[in-house]
Length: 224
Image 1 (cartoon, helix red, strand yellow):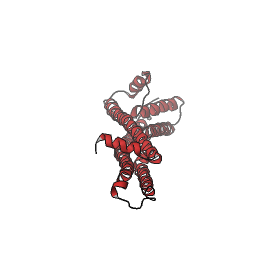
Image 2 (cartoon, one colour):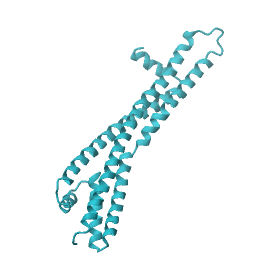
Image 3 (cartoon, one colour):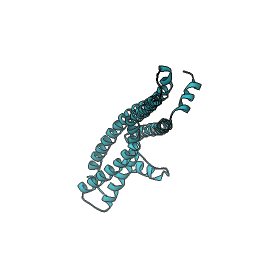
Image 4 (tube, rainbow, N blue to C red):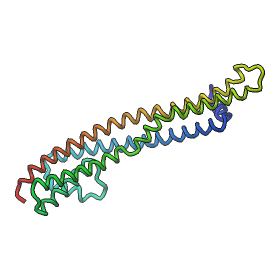
C-alpha cells in the first residue's frame, strides 16, 4: 500500500475513527516530545552527579565547596542540591549551638526533603508515558471495532456481499490499531528505560546522603 492510498483510507474513514486516529497521533507526538526532554534531563543529571562526586571526594574542604555552590546563580539540582541543603542546615544548627546529634539529624532531614524534590522532578510526567503505553492499543482497537461495525452496517441493504465491498472499510479501521501500537510501543520502551535510569539515580542519591551524614557525624565532634 503506497502513501497516497494510506492517506485516502484515512480520509475516507468514518468521523469516530478519524477522531481516534487524531487522538493517537497527538498522544504519539506528545510522547516523543516528552521522551526527548526527559532523556536530556536524565543525561544532564547523570553528568552532574559524576562531576559533583569527583569534586566532593577530591579532598576539597566542604565549606569551600559549599561557598562555590552558593555563589553560582543557576539552580542547583541533584547531588548539589542535596549537599547544599544538608550543609546549610548543619551549619545553621551548629551556629545555633544545638547538640551534635540534633545538628546531624536536622541536616539529614533537610537532605531527605531535597532528595524527595529531586526525585519528584526526575519522575515528572512518567505516568503520562505509562498511560500512553497501556491505553493506546485499546483506543486503537476501539477505532478498529467501530470501523468494522460501520463496514458491516453498510452491507445491511445489500443482497450479496463480497470481500471487495468490505475490504476498504476494514482496512481503514485496522489503521487505527496500527496507530495505537505505534504510539504505545515507544512509550513503553521509554518508560521502562527512564524508570531504570531513575532507580539508579535514586540509589546514588541515597548512598550519597548516608555517606555525607556519616561525614557530618564525624565533623560534629570537631570544635565549633
